[in-house]
Length: 349
Ligand code: NAP
Image (cartoon, rainbow, N blue to C red; front, side, top):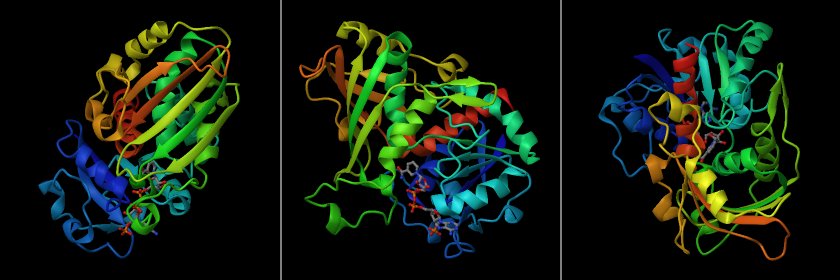
């Protein structure tokens, strides 16, 4: 078993990590870290547990430690990070001297030599790790996963990108409140309401999507080259981001062919049989009223993106539009880091 630690263990994503890691066949939770307000307490006493599944027994009595690499058990090999971005920027580098850091935070995404990876989409970007270790003189390294809305959308785009030419992409999101963290959105702000702004989210979707669909040239990423425009909105849903995607392609496409390439899409995690890999990363629904967050966010344990309403857009030539739902704290956060770590464990450690 590989011993793992979780940073930001008391938060929304941290709780998902714990829930997904409990009973994992290859990873064993050995350390939980959070802020000074939680350090020194039993995990059960330090945490306001928000998940429907009960807190796993095995973590209740673990003493939460400070977020300091010197306090981390030296037997730990992988550290999962769900720290607030500003703090992650300093701390993750310090952990990478000795540990593998699989991070959710945006602080280190797309920095030189630090791979941003969705294992089904761009696993070859892990080749940057050697250069990262050499340039920084680290024994460990950092691997990041994309923003929650980008992951779900890029999973659905990859089979389209591989089979057709995308000229332009518009996306409008309806994002769950858990995406902002436990204290992120006050109930008085979101109930009976929609908030039409999520700071930094549109920029992340626009840049990360092109990076993930890009190619690796030596240690440099050449991003895919088409315009992406995102409009991001917070809605009163607890978990599960919904996204309306509009594509202009360079030819008229047969919708049935698009459904086929999406449903048949598989990547390296499926080939390697990684524990958290969904059998089908993209699930295509035929009903007019699917996908819906409450009904589809948990598809394949929350690790698949569900797509529906695939159709053409009368206002645009050579168009394709659809709606997708992805679980923001599972496939969009903790599950994504764990799948990255499973790939690293299989291919690198
Ligand atoms: P959250 O619920 O607010 O949790 C934050 C965690 O970080 C808590 O464990 C907190 O510990 C800890 N923390 C806060 N300040 C700290 C400090 N100064 N030193 C050490 N630990 C500190 O946030 P979240 O939603 O889990 O998000 C965590 C990260 O994941 C963020 O970078 C976010 O952008 C990213 N992310 C979130 C989602 C999502 O859907 N929620 C998706 C993708 C990525 P205490 O309890 O002790 O304060």
